[in-house]
Amino acid sequence: MNDELSQPHSPYAGRWVARVRGRVIAQGGTPEQALRASQHSRYKERPEIIFMPVSFTLPPLLKKIMDVLPADQEIYLVGGAVRDLLISRVSPDLDFALPSNGISFARKVANALNAAFLPLDDERDTGRVVVTAEDGTHTFLDFATYRGASLEEDLRARDFTINAIAYNLRDGTIIDPLEGGNDLRTKLIRACSKTSLSDDPVRILRAIRQAAAFGFRIEKNTRELMKQSVNQLDRISPERLRDEVFKILKGPKPDAAMRALEMLGVLPYLMPELIAMKGMEQSEPYMYEVWTHTLAVLDYLDQIVSALRVGYEAEKTNDMFTGLLTLRLGRYREQIAKHFAEPLNVDRSMRSLLFFAALYHDVSKPETKTVEESGRIRFFNHDVQGAEIAAQRARAFNLSNDEIERLRMIIKNHMRIHSFADRIESDKQTPSRKAIYRFFRDSGGAGVDLVLLGLADVRATRVHALTIETWNIYLDVARILLENYWERPQEIIAPPRLIDGYELMNELGIKPGPVVGQLLESIRENQAAGKIENREQALSFARDELTKGFNGVP
Image 1 (cartoon, rainbow, N blue to C red):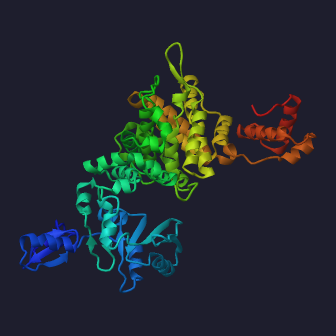
Image 2 (cartoon, rainbow, N blue to C red; image 1 turned 135 degrees about the horizontal axis):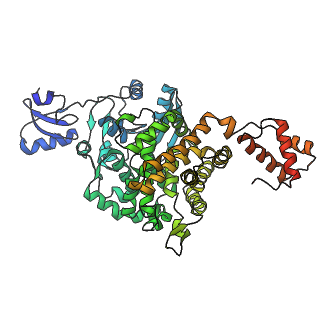
Image 3 (cartoon, rainbow, N blue to C red; image 1 turned 90 degrees about the vertical axis):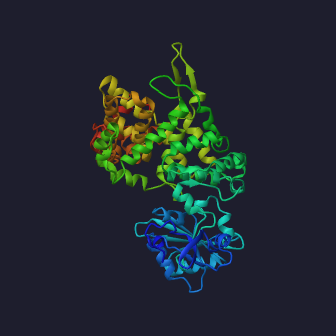
């Protein structure tokens, strides 16, 4: 074999080559391309067409599928899974293409793997296999019949060339008719055809997402095709748009992706309520107008969540603020990971919901803007109104009720962290036990999200003007809240109920009504504050409150 071909990093790796008397005379992404290329220079000779292997590690699950394949079954791994194999990434889902019988073959694979099966798309003959690991995570295997008369037609109908590569499970060869492998090497996102974006405009969002995820650039002609297809986004279902938005927010560089969507003119078709934030001025200590501030919040939130993940190497950071963050809050890495691992909906992550809240946390500032005589700009009640605007968009995106409620809680309460910090800075007053109890009572499971968002918000507000002194104050607030939430839950966050409503009515001789619930809540507040420790004290407190003319929770 030619010495160049035998090298581990041969330029021909993963390519089909045409050889004459042991020498390479042409190459291509498919056997046909290699043959056609060879005929231009050696049209009288009959070259040998061979595939040059490429080195990558197959996931164990793929090997199991290969073991159950019938001997004569033509089948290819396609799309993002092949792309990820070629750049040494682990793909969460595997897509397969075969000539026919996608649904019935999926059923056979599900039976062989003892996995769940469901027909996904009867029209396109697509079946899904759901493999559940021991830790509860799911891998989705989709088996679809070719879109078109052949594998090559199927690949050419896909979105971008890096996703139009197929791996033959039978012989380990690669079919790459659009040179997606070259685009992977040069880190380029290129449309498969002139109609790729107009055929399915949601691919505009996908291009932005994948550019951010892989650190790739979008080819110039593809950018033009994206711009030309933006006005067709209104024919895409809200669910498909939502899914791409949440994938963007789940991935790296969400701020850059959102900035790109805004510059392309996508927001009017996607999240029109965000448009008014651009150019909306803010007074000090804000360093940016509202839209730029929002993008900065996404960026800092991404940095903060990354710095608090399990396995983060804190000693490698050269940012003093991040170093202090990991020093003060690093002990909660596992709890934070668990928090993000328990989504409210199986189709969307908790992280992406938090980032969606960050994107909308100041959405109502344009409509709540007031200017004082001094010239200071204020946005009274923007948190409460913003929560409802975000909830409206969430409903339009068909998010679950639990997700909508969590989103509303985050945005409605996002200013409370700043209030705690202001009290420490101005009065040296740390949050009281009662204040901590009320914070988590009002925010529930969103309390952790509020802490992380608050830290990102102050960094994006003051940017380079943020002092170490102020940052330490915010870290104090975060530590106090998280410490009580995870280390003293029964004492302060959710004290055990000492008495129920029936007992309270019997002991005090009062009738059913709102006052019963108000008294019970007031008792719990005082439990959290350390002022009530047993049933007798609870009853005594309730009697005193009634004697004083109790009128509800303060």
